[in-house]
Amino acid sequence: AEQSISCSHERSTKLFTASIRHSLSQHGSQCFFRAVPCPSYESFLRGECLNCLPNICPIMGLEAQSSMSRGVHFLNTTSTPDFCGL
Figure 1 (cartoon, rainbow, N blue to C red):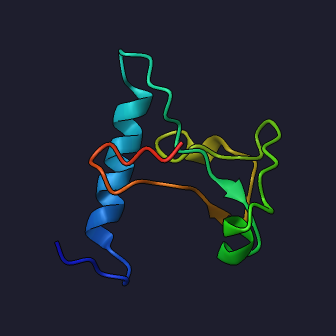
Figure 2 (cartoon, rainbow, N blue to C red):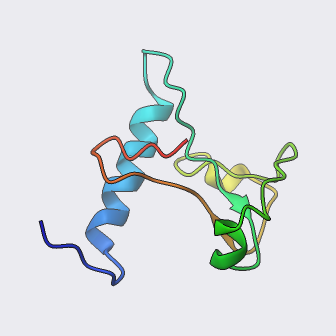
Figure 3 (cartoon, helix red, strand yellow):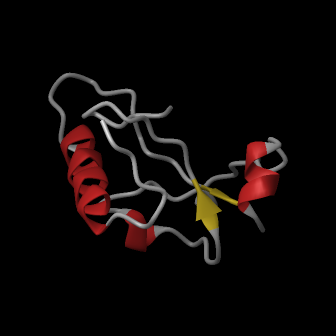
């Protein structure tokens, strides 16, 4: 399968849809698509941005607007259809 390193708007809609499905899951999903505030992707990859205080790390999806956090955030996803990167 060919992979693109460019921004994928199609993938973003799939990720958002998956985040909604997980939040509405009747099966006790453990995936929350939690993002952490971090100044750069490099810092995120080095594990320098792991502090998630209440209301600081927003959950991607319908409830994202209720977060008090502002700025740049990162989260892990996977390439499989549920995309959950815990």
